[in-house]
Amino acid sequence: MRLATVQAGMARHPRLGQKWKAARLFLPDASAIKYDGHMKSMSKILSTCIVASFLVSGCVGLNSGVKTTVDPYKGTETKHVAIMVAGDLTATILRVQLADGKTGYSLGVTFLGTDWMFIDSGESCVVLADGERLPFAGEGSWKFREVLGGNLIRETAWYVLIPRERLVKIANAQQASLKVYGTKLTREGRFNEAGRKAISKFLAATESEAK
Image (cartoon, rainbow, N blue to C red; front, side, top):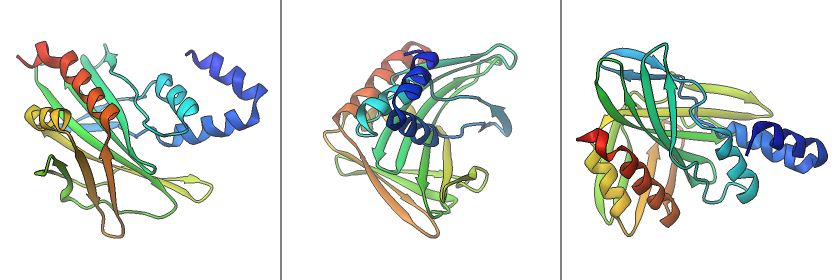
């Protein structure tokens, strides 16, 4: 769905316009990802297709599909998929291939609410895949906190250079849930069947690159 098409629909249907604005708030801010001590900028990590999915589903089972972003100026290529794991929590999985040939997977969690979570540094995200505990450690959300207006805030925490095997376990699990710990709030979510299938497709799309 093209951006112009969505905007035209907004003009004709005010409620659609309200959903469009809400959907934009859920897009994680991945303006900087840290690899080997260098900050690698990325813009518009999620495409209009994510927003279109939101408009149709009203946030339930949000899935962006596998998207690719190429930055010829930085010499990077990024594949990414976004999954709604709770009403106020989105998980983004991405793989970056840098100009020097280095690659890595990252997991990002974005919280949208009316109060701060203050996602902790260290082991602040844990996934249970069929009961197996898969911890993720990072710097927390202190670099990616925004006041959006209308009493809404957004914060994102990135867990970088994570093992691909952990993503495989989540994709293959019969049940997979996630818990994110903050200094002020704690949030839980789950990867439903559609979400796990989205991760499987993402892994299939990057399988040849991982070898």
